[in-house]
Image 1 (spheres, rainbow, N blue to C red):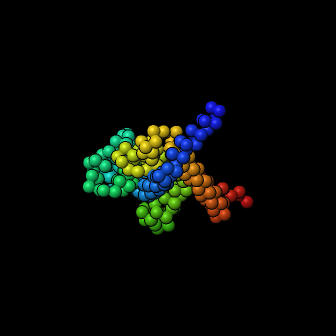
Image 2: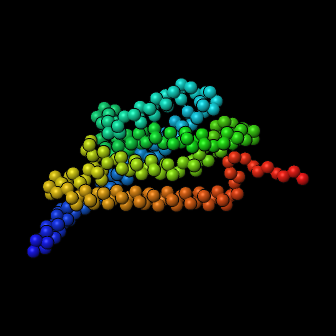
Image 3: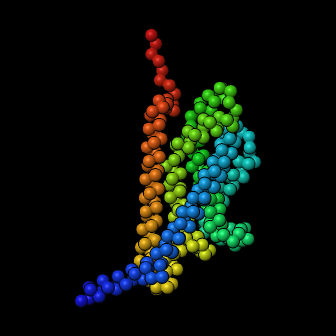
Length: 250
């Protein structure tokens, strides 16, 4: 009798968390906002992160751009050394206070935060490229910038694809703090529903499942891209970094 009553209670709690007042729509609206913020944030983060890494790499290789490289290093140090939720507060309440769309504020904040981490990943990827690649490009008559764009950056990007996807996955989960400034993301939805049902169990479980599904799908995409890149490398017959095999003397 108690088990039947308990089952009925759980069913009622489940119905209250999802079906009453079409509350299930809130979950998917929050998920949509989370994915939207993450998408634009990762674009901003990757572009700015590669620019930061390229400046630091150029300064190390050529001795030029010393002041811009110093600014890039200060930027990455400050961003990586402060919590993202404080950066969100600063952007929302001080810098972008005139922006009415919270999604834009969130995308800019998380994008700038992600750029600092992408910069370190990209810098490591650039430094993993054999220095002979740059010398080969310059010997063919290419300028430094063209060598970077056509030879160095494409190879570095291939090397850091897994790390970039890990950063994207972390970024999706980091956006859960956007609710602190009233942005309706997936992390904010359980609190809204709990305020009406006084029950956290099912709202938290469903939000967790949605996050898990998104992360799992991103992981599948990452593995697919890695597989395609490895196939293209094998099919192109590229000589691996490290040089050509020495020919035997006749």
